[in-house]
Structures are given as C-alpha cells and as structure tokens.
Length: 366
Image (tube, rainbow, N blue to C red; front, side, top):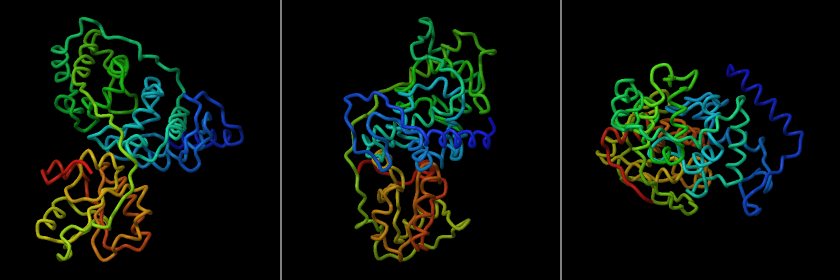
C-alpha cells in the first residue's frame, strides 16, 4: 500500500475507533497501573492512545506510517511479511527491552523507560492495526534436526548475508542478527520464514527459490547458534540531574564549525575535549542505553525528560546532544533546546556508534 494511502487508512481507522468504546481485554492480575498520561483504563486497549505513543516515541525512526528507515536500520513495522510473523509478545518484548547495543532503545518502565505495560499493549495494538494478512503462526515450528551450523556458515557467506548483516551477524548496512535480545525474542520458525520469504519492498530478498528447506534451516541454525544470555535486570526509575554536567569547567569555548545549522562531527568534539574546551555532552537516549554504554563524561537526559531540567542547563555553554539513531532522538533534544532559546547547541553527527567506531572514550553504568 502506498505510504499516503496507508496513512489515510490508519487515520480513518483511528477516527472510527475514537467513536467507539474501548474494547475490553483480559489483563493478568486485573490490576490497573498508574500509566502515562492518556493511557487507557486497565483491561482495555486504546488504539488512539497507541497512535499517540507511536507518534511520540517511534515515528521519528520507523516512519509516520511504519514505512521504516526514517533513521538508519529502523525496520518497516508496517511491512506485511513482518507483521504476519511477529507475535504480539515479540512486539511487546522488543518495545519493552529494545535491542541493547543498537539504536533500538528500551522503552519499558522495567528498563527506566517511559512506557507502562498498558502503554505497550496500546502501542502493539496500534502497530497490529496495520496488518492486512493472516498470522503465519510460526512460533511452534522447529528446525530440521539435521540442520548444520557448519553448512550454515558457508551459505551465510556464499549467499551474501554477510554483506548486509555483517561478519558473524554483528551488523552491517542492515540489522544485527547476533544481537542477544533479538535472538531471545524470535522463534526458530520466525527465522526460517524470514529467510524463506524475505521482506517484500525491502532489501531483504526471499531465498525460497535459491535454497532448499534444509539449507534454509542450516542458515537459521547458524543464526540461532549466536544466541547468548541477556541481562534482564530491571533498572530503577530515573530522574535526570544536570547539576554537574559541564566537562572541563573554566575552559575555553570549543571552536565548532556547525554544518546545516546543527551538526558537529565526532572528531571535532573529541579534539575540542582534548584541548580542554568546556561543553556539555547530553545523551538524549532512554536511560537504559546510557547505562549500557555512553560517551565518557556525558550526562543522561532522555529527550522525553529534557523539560524537567531545561531551566537548569546553562545557556552560555555549548551543549552537544547525541543518540544512536544517529540523529533522530538527538534532533528532538536539539529542537527543544532551540525552542527554549539556546543558541550554543549542536547534534553529534552520526551519533554514538560513530564515536565508538572511531575509538574515542566511552563508559558504562550510571
């Protein structure tokens, strides 16, 4: 469906739903959570609320109508092949815990994010509203017992998987297949069907006419062999604090050459810090991303919590915001600062992962 038609269809659907009572659903324990502003009542699903959450937290990466790739590697959530394979549990877990080590953040309150369980249910229901095909019901499918990881390694190279997904699935131009959270969340059947049918209208080709069923299972077995344990330890609720945010206090201003009115390169920032320039590095990602890894000396101020501390930020110091998208979330922070009258502001061009790639200092934890 063309993007414009899809957006019109979605808007029309929500308009209709807003005239109807929210549909009741069973909720484990039957208890209401406090939830975010506008959240549906406990035991109910609100597509209208889900649409609002999508616009606030998802659209800047995945596109207004789920068309994908508004930010690097943000997949098309409205792709029908994806939706027929992805269970509600898969979608909810992906939103809740994200993909640590990638630009896909953890949005659930379990990881200090802004979304409650009810919020996530509404968001998943909204994403599901784009689906026009029947579910594939793949989660119970099992791979052929004779599937071989060794053969899969050969096919992974011969059929070009490495060119898109990187050596050992560690990510290239497209998503990282060895991400432990991805592999924890997907079934073997999901992997098999994704290889078999591909993703129409994306760069992910189908292989059903190139590989036998066993060869496809060999590839799926290889990908599954990369799975490793994940850290699902919850994070406490987070409140940003910018009282000690300035790096190199008392130093000179950095001499930044800002491009397109907002971007400054990672080399320029690293060089300025090495020369003792004073600035604030504002990590605009959800706090769980900061805990997993951040630029050394940065302060965690998730873009959706920036208003809580914006009056405490100094307007006479340079503030460089960054994210991993590489610009979507940091751009939100930049726009908020600009609207509040800040002028010494910039976005780190290409973001956190470019900083990491260049070998500049990073840190983990709070």
